[in-house]
Image 1 (tube, helix red, strand yellow):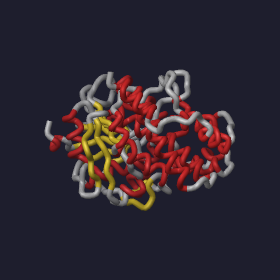
Image 2 (cartoon, one colour):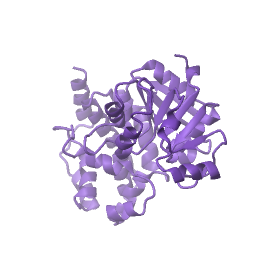
Image 3 (spheres, helix red, strand yellow):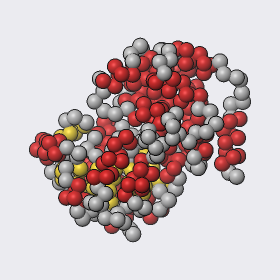
Length: 348
């Protein structure tokens, strides 16, 4: 199919990023439906033309249809975007099981791992909605900026090259550059794992450890992400592009980053429970960290020293300063030894 075949799109999820992607599609002249899980929220979006809860101050065009009806939302669409927090992807997908046509291609823009199953969002969608073409849309983006029309770049990653090009054609614009990519596993894992490292970066900020420590943390975190990705069948180079290092930099340094903010408050002495109670939106890194060390985790003997310390701080009550000391006291090694070994194993 040609990119021009994308004429009507369904965006599932009315959070900040879902609303922003719906705006981007409308700006490109594509008929767009935004689905909300709550009828009262869909009515408010239609009436006020603003997502006051998740994207305040950004006007929604009159052409954007907002609804809470799965069947009405899916009627006549030729592409669907799932933009739901990862821990809710399964139950939302089940609501669309009978509404979405069997061959309708899907795009997932969720970032994380399901705690109970260790599955990525695309794997959850495939399990619930059946085998179909799926594209992963990810990269260094904050809804607060993209929604206002500030420039950003993402990747559309899929084994189906035609679908990746269609997604690119539907979303690409003068302010939103979309690259195609052929490693959806790596792209999806990059988007999940960078949130864990962002919590560590926030802890570093909260402890006021300085720029040197944070630079080292991001660099070693990038290596840790790549090693894990390779172990799951991803390509190493994916983690050194927009889906990996690009997203990592944004999430670890931005004032908009929920995951960094969680870490920063914990570094300053707050408990995880206190931090989450004050948050309106979901910090995916908390639950991805839990999934990495859950009963279904596929990490095996792979060492994830930064993620391990984040888990200990979040869920085992470890003092953040002690976690930093344990990272610094590890056995000295060559900088790239572990990554080189992982790449060799991955190429076999």
